[in-house]
Structures are given as C-alpha cells and as structure tokens.
Length: 98
Image (cartoon, rainbow, N blue to C red; front, top):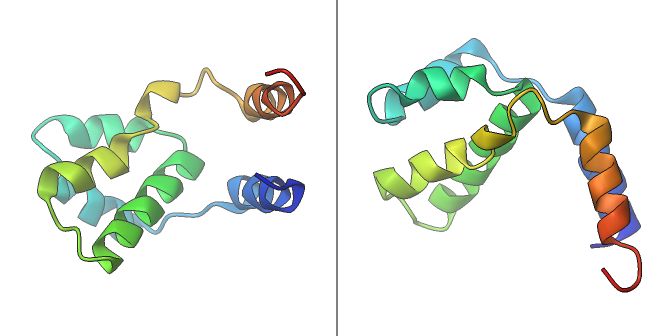
C-alpha cells in the first residue's frame, strides 16, 4: 500500500467516530452475546467494521454471518493493541525483505 494510503488510514483512526444509533444497529445484527464484544472494541475498530459491512452491502452481499464477521473482524485486537503498535507493525512490514 502506498504511503499516502497509510497516512489517510492513520488520520481516519485518529478521527474515528461512531454514532450511538450506528452502534445500536450493529449490535442488533450480531448473534446473541456478540453485541458486548462489538461494544468493547475501540471506536476506530468499530468504525472500520461498520465501513467494511457497508461496502459489502453496497456490492450486494447481505449474508448475516458475513456482515457479522465484517463488524467483528478486528475484535481480537482489543484495547491492548495500541495505535503505536499498529504503526510499528506497518513500518516493519513495509521494510524490504519482510
């Protein structure tokens, strides 16, 4: 990915917002118990999941399991994986030979 893409990605992470109505709608789409997992995610990860699910729907993909996976695909990162960890991982991954 280009440096410009990574800069935009970083800016989106820092400015991410999710409206309460978006959180409520997302939680309602998830299997029983998964709403708590979704709500425990950092706001930037919730925003990203919402955006991924919306892109899937835009191209005609409406399978409930697929959309739930889109909403939760970053849930394992949790609050332990800080932004600086992600930046370092991207920078190291972009080095030649990695």
